[in-house]
Amino acid sequence: MAISLDLITGAISFLFTLLILSYVIGDNPLFKIGTYIFVGVSAGFIAAIAVWQVVIPRLVSPLISTSVSITEKGLLLVPLLGALLLIMKISPRLSGMGRIVMAFLTGVGAAVTIAGALTGTLMPQVMGTINAFDMAPYQGNAGLLLESITNGAIVLFGTIFTLSYFHFGARPRADGSMRRLGLIEIFAWVGRVFIGITLGAIFAGVYAAALTALIERLSSLINFIGNFL
Image (cartoon, rainbow, N blue to C red; front, top):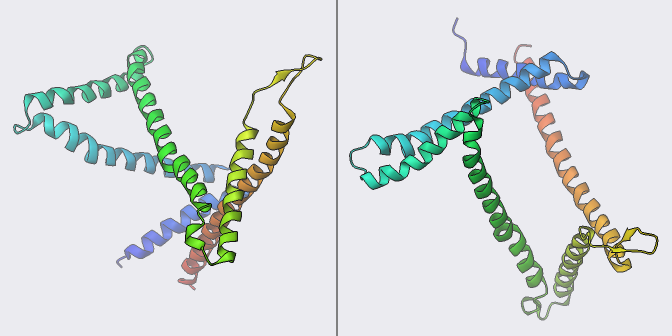
């Protein structure tokens, strides 16, 4: 009797759902088996994607192709050398050879992260706060104008107070202790309130997403068992 593909995938989903949900009773071998398999499959998938979509088409194929110029092949030797040096980190004695490449990757990653944070987060927030005080689009509508100004003021003061919380400049006092200015302390206290509200909202979102995933998994378990009843 032929076994349908839906039955096989359903049985696998049912099994792994039980393995992960077994964490409810505590850390146990079943949960560890499930997590190890997930991590292994994810690592294998990422490695396969890297090989077939990056290494082979962008490095190996151009090096063996006759249509690529010698200059371009020479430039491709740089990432090839870097990859070989990274492989050296497998050996404890040769791991130092990959430090230059790791330093380069770390520097590039940090630069990309900082640039992305500035252009993708900080500057849009600054422009959004500035645009919130633009009264031109709300002329003639006092309600929308007041709402826009209120939202902009909350964002502006929230930013100022939150940044004040991370201001660590202090002055020595007569007793030798280091304390920030009184105004900065007040701003920092208000900043803690904004940070607490933000973290609470993030936690609520994560909890809602996790609860949704749990309900979906329990529903799939019920449906799978119902197919045999």
